[in-house]
Amino acid sequence: MATLTQAESILDVDAAEWNALCGTDQPFIQHGFLASLEASGSVSPELGWQPAHALLRTDDGALVAAAPLYLKDHSMGEFVFDFAWANAYAQVGLNYYPKLLNAVPFTPVSGPRLLARDDGARRALAGALAKLPEHMGVSSLHSLFGDDGSTAAMLGADAHARRGCQYRWFNRGYADFDAFLQQLSSKRRKEIRRERRRMTDAGVAVVVRRPDEIPAALWDTLYAFYDRTYAIRGQDPYLTPAFFAELTTRLRDQVLFFIAYHNDHPVGMAFMMRSADTLYGRHWGCETDYHSLHFETCYYAGIEYCIEHGLACFDAGAQGEHKIRRGFEPVATWSTHVIADPRLEHAIGDFVEREAAMMADFEAEQRQRCNFEQAPATPP
Image (tube, rainbow, N blue to C red; front, side, top):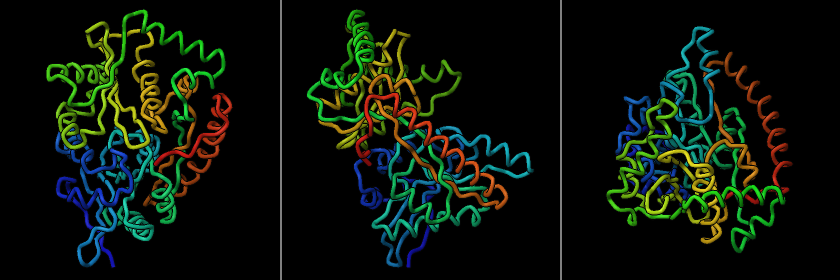
């Protein structure tokens, strides 16, 4: 017999217990990443993220399953857009917020969302989570960017699946960057070489640095680049400066900065993380706009890193059909949704079913545009 409890902070959960359930070294689901978000103030009740992490324990106190869980009073920072659903609730006089979110904040990266000792514990956790909207008096539960195991468990608990599409680069055993280019069409090879040549001709080069290789004086500059990306859209950045300090302490070996220099002057950066088999591009920013700087810093330098270090996959972030022209391939992503109100549950279920068919067609069209017939198995 197992009982579901909830923790008001990941900092109250033993890191070793949590990480023992992850089943992967993907950084985002690790205790250290989630703890960095909370300890830095990037995630807090004041910002509309109330931690309510789900813990499934046996009678003797053993943690057999867990899930990052938040009570949300908005839909920002999620990357699976449900604003139309909130509007539909309002039109019939119901409150969509608060809702429950099983996800990694600000991180549209597919991976485990229901951590478990085994499949039975995962199914038990999914069943318990599916009952929470009714028990807590909230509108819904949303599990975003789940891997196959998490998605299947939630579907077994009668959740609705919603399909999305992202773009990833896969390493097919390339000896070097030029060997990768040889797999592309002549037109695309010329475009990429032209973009990279612009950087070389401008005297811009990208270097990869671990946190312990970054001078103290450079940290403020790197954060300013990140901040500028949001400022030009009129937003405050999601992550505080303290987040990067926390993360480089808790997960130092998985943090990388791709820093673009014009001569000796830093002009841009891409913040990335890695697992044993995958590079993850997360955030980027620059001092000023250079032609092709984004492509070089966020895509091409990452591809080179994967080839040099034998990584199987490069997940460079959400969205971006332009990635097809740069050797990335379409892959399906999944989220699952439990809707408490039976009337809206039926409407949303019908919507996501029709949307999934359209997304499958869209992905097939994108596949036809890329140079590869089928993607390799996606690392977890």
